[in-house]
Structure formats: C-alpha cells, structure tokens
Length: 113
Image (tube, rainbow, N blue to C red; front, side):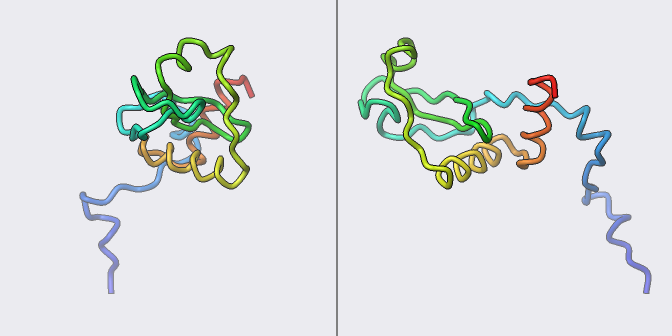
C-alpha cells in the first residue's frame, strides 16, 4: 500500500534547520495575547494593556497598568517561579503560533549567539 499523505497538498512538512534559521517572528507581538483583569506588577485593575518581558528562559506576555508600563524603573519585580515562567513562555509561543525551539533560535540570533 502506498502512503499518499505526504502528497496531500493540505499537509505541510516541518521546516528543516536552514528554514528555521531564516524564519523570523516578532516575539514582542501581543495581538493574540489575553489581557488579564489586573496588573501583574502592582495589582491595579484600571488602564491595563498587555506587553512582553524577558525572563531567563524566554519571553512572556504580561498585563500591566499604565503607571507600571511607563515607570518600569519604579515597578515591583515580577515574582514567578520556574514552573510558572516556563508555562508562560510556552503560552506566549502559542499566542505567536510558534514552538519553543523557534523562540529559542530567534532569541539566540538576537543575542548574537
């Protein structure tokens, strides 16, 4: 029996390493990221927007109030454990429509690695 799944035009193959190197996505894009009901930094519930922040293991989307967005040097730090951070990095990848390997590859390129 011949396997015709690979000939199906509705299916696409996974990109190889060279294609991943050329693939670029705006990791700061928050168009598909949800806005929570409170600021992740101070707990305020008004004038909220979503943005991104870098963590040691990748980018996450974060809801912040206007005050914390514009006064980043005065806002309290995010207090996230490793598991929560990893979960949120994965969620942001889903919002962007990419996988963790793509985010890691792009972050390496941006950091000159």
